[in-house]
Amino acid sequence: MHSENLERWSHGHHFHVSNATAERSTRAVMWITAVTMVIEIAAGWWFNSMALLADGWHMSSHALAIGLSAFAYATARRYATDARFAFGTWKIEILGGFASAIFLLSVAVMMVVGSLERMLDPQPIRYQEAIVVAVLGLAVNLVCALILGKAHHHGHDHNHGHAHGHDDAHGHEHHHDLNLKSAYLHVIADAATSVLAIVALVSGWVYGWSWLDPLMGIVGAVLVASWAKGLIVDTGRILLDREMDHPVVDEIRDVVETGADAGESRITDLHVWRVGKNVFACALTVVTHDLALDAERIRQQLSVHEEIVHATIEVHYCRDATPHEAATQ
Image 1: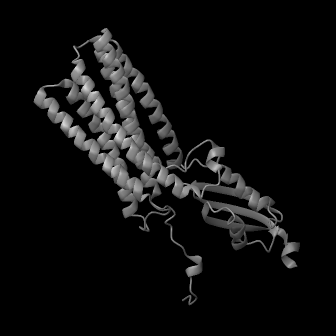
Image 2: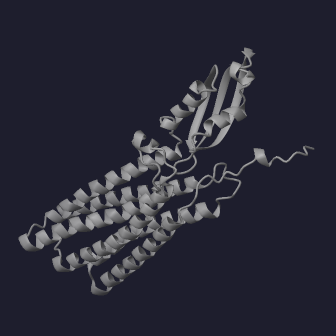
């Protein structure tokens, strides 16, 4: 049996630090949305108001999606040290964001269907009552947006010191908390549709433009769908490990193949994937003429990039391999 202490070669696989502020904020917004939903549905039933009932049921979809985001945070935190997750539980949060984006897209579809029905079969609108409902919904969503916005800035400031500018160069914003972003988009989408509804309802009340109400519904649906699409692309890219166009890939190649200690080395196989907001794991195969080059030395070379937190390295030596001149001095 091996008697040497193996701790230096062992390490955990918990690469992501959970955002406690975002989790608390998302949970608070979920409860605010749920309470508002219950009040609107109850008032709509009591006062026989379709406007209140419709807005209440519409808000239920957002409460469900935001609740999903809160659940994703809690689940990722609960299983953070579970050895069954090879690279930690961060992708549970990403999966929550992806599912929430699908919910957002379904809301946009329902908005289009409802608006088209109103265009084909116009119904009398209780303008004053509907305006009150829209203003109430807007106020609630602004409060929720403020809560989630503070959580977003807190998380961004916390992680700013670990960023290397790769995401800006890459054209993406993966250092953002996409699970929090999904909850935030639900709130902003609801607020945007409330604003459009208020404009349409006031115009219909004052000028008699009843056609503007369903038209604004379609405009709002297009806006919500575009946000949902962007979130689906961002979360889908991570879930599918599509990271080989990220600048960190070129940096790994530069360090191993052209660095000061690289020698005559070439990477023949390289895989890079994200295991946290701005941290990566990689697996690479190196072919070299330098007998002094081993996995530990390559790992030291890669250590200049803090975002590479896990590396699996395989080294093959050419038949005519010789000790590198620099390594023998």
